[in-house]
Length: 243
Length: 224
Picture 1 (cartoon, rainbow over the protein chains, first blue to last red):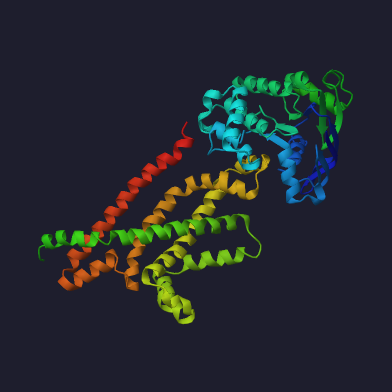
Picture 2: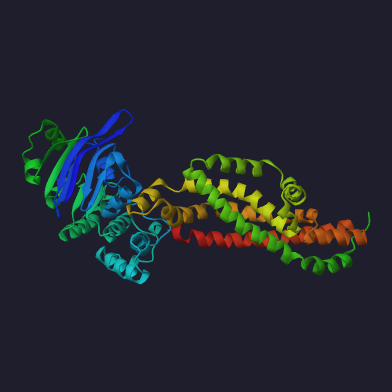
């Protein structure tokens, strides 16, 4: 169970997140949509403390963090309970595909190398990149890099996986393979919070769609309700532009 | 103008070669120590430990701002007068200390710049999987910074090898000191110093070859 209460983030005078309340059930897939610059990515980044929220509480499984008084230990616990897939992949440039996936298992979780490698190879197989185990990121296509990025996030075994526009930086030809992998992750009843502009994919994968505008949750519900019978005017305008 | 005494020069080569190990030993030990010290200084400059930062800035400023020869004299001849346990230190140790401190200041700046050059997303990715700041630095950032800084660091190593010649002013008989002794016996200064110059040159050129190999190796991960 994931619970957010009053999550607030300001950059200077701009309030990017204006008291977000959100509950996500175990195994639930929530897709966040909304106009650019309305705090979707900031919401995800705050959940991983890549951006430090100014106020509010975050509960992920056993980990409870009060943003106002988060200690270094709190932040590490939260990061170890969540995993993050970046828009620009952000694979470790000095490590092979296999090592990228192994890194958290060895360094953060302290597992023996042999066990970590076995687990990483299994994940690499799920991403369909077994033959790329020894390749460095620079030698992989965008789609392959993002699949490794998802593999790296899967390895953590996090309570919550965060996807920050995982296909936005990809050439169109690579988008399909990344979405396919995300579908396979979803089939494992992994709790996922996804920011995406792929509306068709959102409709298909989401248990719930959340529309954010101006740093607040404006409307939320089942995909067919939010996408087909929107109530809020801003949501209607947004959907007219993107659908 | 007189002709060069080639027989004398050829005879001198094996004599000076005998001191190459000491020269390389001083440079190698100083390089390893300077690398460790410079990495620590550079990491401090990046994360800025409160209360320590000004000390590191001062250290770097002093050792970059004064000549190596002055620093060596200060350590070898000066410090033992005020710090008693340093009277035990011999010329080789003093030279290694001086080279270490002097070059660590330069190398710290090179490594700091390289750390800053590592993409921000690499930090975020490491933190997102739950790595501590120290783990991020050690496993992700420093290896990538090392690659960026490698050519500069090899250049400093070359400077360091040439810098060991100053150790002769501390009474150490290394390549330069040995040449000086030979020359003052034979009075053939031009021949003697030409031989030692060529030997330094050969060592440095050999290292340049090694650097090219090293760069190819370090760029392996980034080849498309």
